[in-house]
Length: 293
Ligand code: GLU
Ligand code: ZN
Image (cartoon, rainbow, N blue to C red; front, side):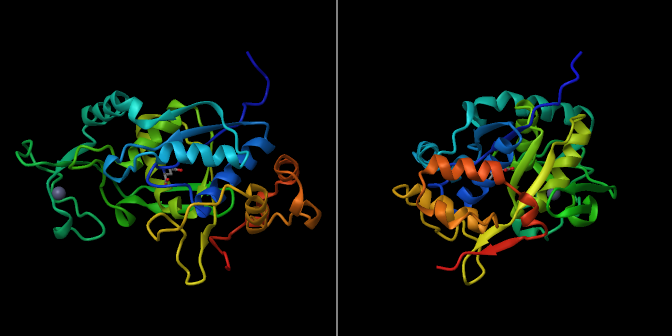
């Protein structure tokens, strides 16, 4: 028996779809500081299941960038693609429980929220199909550490959603639940853009009998036009030549008010200060932060 505190286990899980950009580094730093300030572990996982979107060399470039910024992770890096059997075993469980059904609808014929037209198909389709999970009107709630109480009615707000795509790729919503459980993640710090996904993930955790981690969704960085910095908007890679200046700016955007004396301090000193003074409550209820050029 142990009476000690359960250690904090957090993670950063970038997709290898391009170099690490400023917006991702912002999330990485928040997640790192939260883990380190709790004397926790900070694990790194490369979310490489969506193979059509992967870009060769970007996983290595992401690791190099994190390293250059002093965001050292614990343990060895894991890649989702090492665990394909694991996803399928869990999927089989849900199939056995009759919670999943094949769907042949094309994206064109679908509205935003899936109506469930394929729910009662008796035979397996002969054309390619996706696998959807049945949802119902249950309310899924969780208390986000920054955004407060979030409640969704899954059937109304999301409908039956896809766990395995028509192209046979395991969908993000499902993979992330299996991954976080396998790695014993008990705290997830990630961008506000994923908040809307969280109730679906909690629902899957409930169906699989998994304990949900705590969640903290930090604001996303937007440009002056109000667009999120992302690989899709071609946000450029961060410059690894002056890491302390970038970290200083990120800490400012994380509302941590780093003292100006530290502007020219060595990177390790700046990060040490940031861990010691990390106060995520300064981000409470913020969903987006503008980076003015
Ligand atoms: N791989 C996802 C992304 O880059 C993040 C997954 C997560 O943090 O849950 O958007
Ligand atoms: Zn369908």
